[in-house]
Image 1 (tube, rainbow, N blue to C red):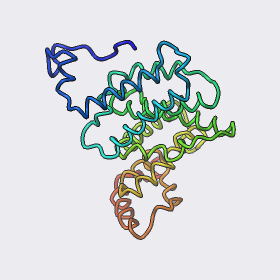
Image 2: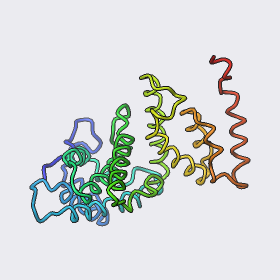
Image 3: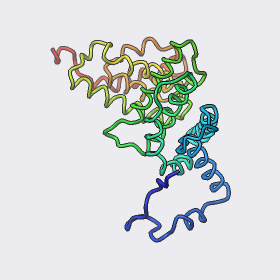
Image 4: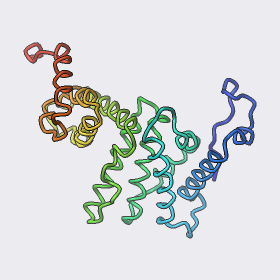
Length: 264
């Protein structure tokens, strides 16, 4: 596999340290994790196109990466180590994704799951203006839908947002808001759902997730941002434990919301 790790820069922290010296500063557990993830990347990419590296084997390598990332992103008080160790391989993994064309169900599932991983990596590695987390999540949704159309639904399609942790959901919600604004600027009618169906399907997952994790304000903010506050009435996650917080936050936000008569 080609070396895609970042080169030392003059103003980088740890200037003058060679790659081997940096690795030596890691604990044994960290070294083992780093090597395991790098092996998974090598297997997944399969740069030599070895016939022995089947799609099933590549999916197994992806399993390891997914498990490590999900465990680490469940509670993010700092950048998780799997994200740090996969950072040098982000561009390579994107190239691998681009090289996966249409194929049998096993290959489509590999592409869908890789898009999930790239969406999480893009949370800290992608360029904000490119909204790569959202881009890869939407691509993954399409592939999971394709598998359903082929009567071969993936077990990995369910709960495929919250399982990556609250920080990822929050980051994705921010990109959804940006994408919604851009589509409106480009001419989409904000009062029609047709131009936003892909975004709204994610919002239908994110909002209940926020509400059920005591983040009612974030759920409401997202619905206000995409002008779908009425969807709050459809939620079955609102109950006696949170309705007061929701009502209080709605009252507080009312002062900042435009009167429809002012917009006519």
